[in-house]
Length: 176
Image 1 (cartoon, rainbow, N blue to C red):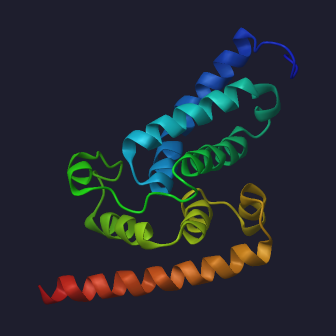
Image 2: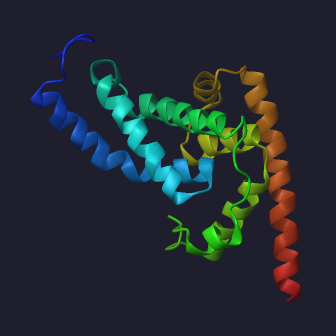
């Protein structure tokens, strides 16, 4: 077994490969929901997996949890490079060519994806961690470095906004 200061062993590599293969789709979808661009999401997942592998001796006990924290941090690093906030919308040209990991899903998933894009980054991050990555309130607070009460209030606020957006989009599609 390797320690924090030594190189990962071949056994570590095999364990990491198994983890990465199994958890990659979840990381990619989470990154896409956070960054709103498949190319950036793929880059973020690569950065996340690199961080997890570099710290595999510590991460191996709970690699999914470790990778969720790493993913949020990689996405935040990207937002910092963009001037402190996530890009809210892609240009029409990029949006038309962007590959979406939800293409094989129902139209409801597209509506949810579009509605999530309109939320502010704190609510979007919290809802993605809570309901897509299935973290508890405590785990979400730990990953984001915020109070549990903030997670609860932001979850409530974000869900209320989503309900309003999804209800209004359903009414529009039913009229058309």
